[in-house]
Length: 398
Ligand SMILES: Nc1ncnc2c1ncn2[C@@H]1O[C@H](COP(=O)(O)OP(=O)(O)O)[C@@H](O)[C@H]1O
Ligand SMILES: [Mg+2]
Figure: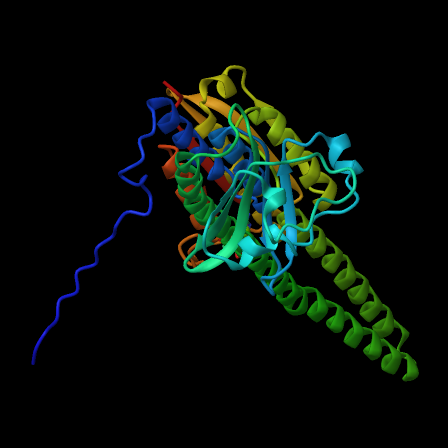
């Protein structure tokens, strides 16, 4: 048996050709441009960063970035730099990608022209388009596919773009290709998440709410049959059960909505954040709430500790709403032996923390992870029938 060893030589695509010398300023500008194009995850923002960075790097009055549609022959998007809003509004239509611009969508090579209007493929400008002469077009590729093209026009301070300009923009284009691909992947991932979330909500509604309403329906059918037999007392009892079932369902849906609602908390105002959380909790569950915040406790925490406490409170409240059947909830934020404590106690039915399944990525586990990540610890105390107490201790910020 014989082996062949392949050595992968990477002639680095990410360096300037050896025969072109860039000044330290140009190197710095290149670095800035590269950082700028990869600063954002949104595709629209990324495209804007790319045109702006390219115009600055090559000293062009105008820059544009065209992204082809699926067919690869026409422009799906066209982002510009250098035109004022009024100027671009006056231009009758965006380029279709038939002329010079289209050439670059199909050709792998850059195109550098002293006067773009003299090129045989030039189709002329639409009405009200500012005149442009010098031209530098560079395709943006990623893994062999053309993702778009960069077009720079009207070199400032010279009649045409230089070979060094071209090399710099080609380098930038490679990073731009990566950035565009990244932004696209990110958008896809976000879409997937939304789809997963929808499936989860659908399943939850099916397993929870639909089943409960179905059960109420069965109870009501039963009322019909006992009334037909003339048993009014039994009929009444069944009606009472049906009403109770519906009320429970309403409570479950409210708790579910409370759990779904995304909350933004940046770790700045913990007490205000908790107050808002508790107000929503109260409105949705009709559970009474007491909240005590000792002066100085919030101030002792850094943003990390605040964030951890907020998220733990959110999960503990959502659990109380879903599982506790409590009538009252007591929340306190205090300082204890040099630590900051947050306690959430409900007077509901309690559960055995040893017995419940600790699922990865679920509430109880998440609370523990959050507390540990902030350098603290959490205890969950829940004697059956006597409510649940969640208590977190986190160290103060130094
Ligand atoms: N405040 C509470 N009162 C009663 N039971 C609770 C409470 N908090 C948690 N539990 C029980 O612990 C289990 C696990 O909680 P958790 O990990 O948050 O998962 P989930 O809320 O998704 O069911 C719950 O299903 C419930 O049985
Ligand atoms: Mg939970």
